[in-house]
Image (cartoon, rainbow, N blue to C red; front, side, top):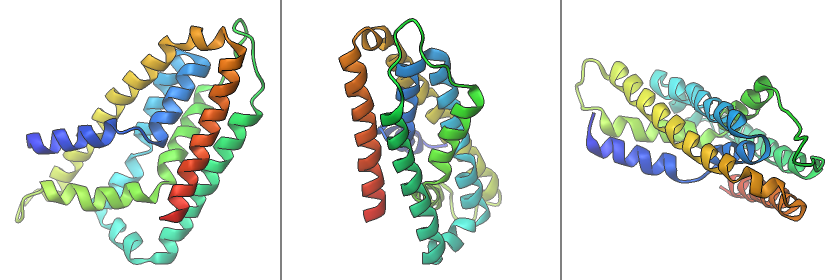
Amino acid sequence: MSVEFLLTALVIVATPGTGALMTMSAGLAHGTRASVIAAVGCTLGIVPHAVAAITGLAALLHASAVAFQVIKYAGVAYLLYLAWSALREKDQPPEAPAPRSAARVIVSTVLVNVLNPKLTIFFFAFLPQFVHAGDPHSLLTMAELSAVFMALTLVVFLAYGAGAAAMRDRVLSRPRVRAWMRWIFAGTFVALAARLAAE
């Protein structure tokens, strides 16, 4: 495994996107435990894309405009649903934050990444660059690189979530800040949906 792969993967993972936003949102709203669960869910959501890339299904998805569009617009719809959910969430006093089950957080964060067709295309275009031509164990190498990418994702998202959770008390003690945070998260989800739809 090359230093170039590690640096490139780290830059890609550290660039905030939908998964990082979900993890920070969970940390701000529900604390450290929820942010850890969200980080794990986002990491698990990478698995289908990595498997698709490794087995060659990404080539089929890339070749089929219809399949790509279906997955893309499912992702757009889900991001809009997340925006709507953020806006309709009732304000809670600091002493009684609304709890979320681990299963619900995992499902939400896995869906965010599963419904992102660009992640499959990314794996299909990114991983082969770090596999030497003629490597007799190319599938194993790609699986190892995918595992490292997932580990980096988990570590970086845990850091994002921990930072958000550390700011939680300051946010929860100010109703106006809580309201603004809901609007910011909702607006960001809408912006991400619009960008995905336009591409």
